[in-house]
Image 1 (spheres, rainbow, N blue to C red):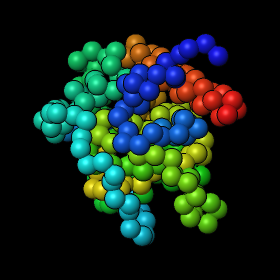
Image 2 (image 1 turned 30 degrees about the vertical axis):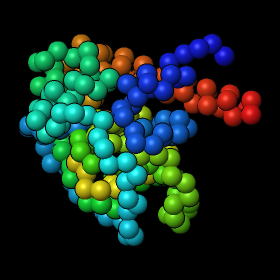
Image 3 (image 1 turned 120 degrees about the vertical axis):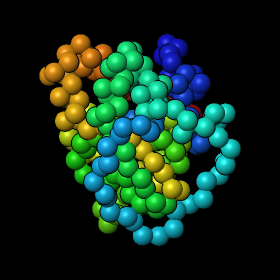
Image 4 (image 1 turned 180 degrees about the vertical axis):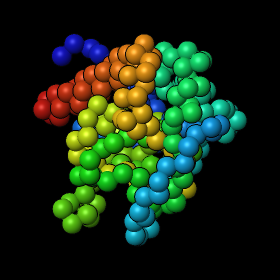
Length: 218
């Protein structure tokens, strides 16, 4: 298999964010941050049980993210890094901000996807569940600056996995309906986002295939 970005862990971090533990690439379908003028999203149900403790407490970022505005944070994400300052400000006014307690579900496997999530602060665990809702497998953790669920911006298929706040977490929520509105009202901006979305999903698919090849060779 030819060498690609999927074989370079550091470049994959640049796409997805900076996870504390590697997230399995098979979760790519269901793979940030905020401040400023973000709106408040509707509350979501909390889960029972105790959330696992984070393994690594040190952050990879030297500057406090709360010092940055929503538009600045969005501009650091690959999906939006080609947008102008004006476009980022418009996008910042459209995203929702949501706070989650430790152990609270952010999104659930098997439910229709309607939005992507960008982790502003805290730690999020991605995991698979059985039909009874019990956790089967932890897929990894995402910390501030990471995002997931971007596939929901294209279609409302059922989510491949669940996401849960491990510790108090703040996230930005960007809904597919808002992306559709951008495409309709600002086609140039919408095209920029869609092109980068295709790029991100393509790189994650490469990562998935690379992992499958490695496992087959063992």
